Image (cartoon, rainbow, N blue to C red):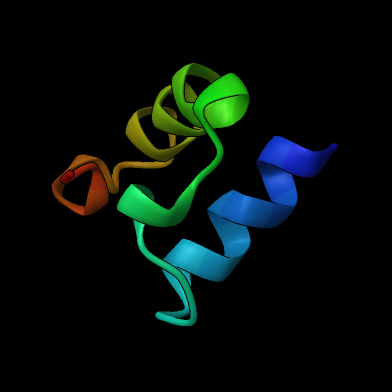
Length: 43
């Protein structure tokens, strides 16, 4: 649930992947890639 919230915030430009807490990074990365937004996965 939190990973999806972070993903949505990244997709709309309010947050960056680098801001994601370490515990959520892998799941957020997976969701972004599955959504076709792999270019947003940057440190």
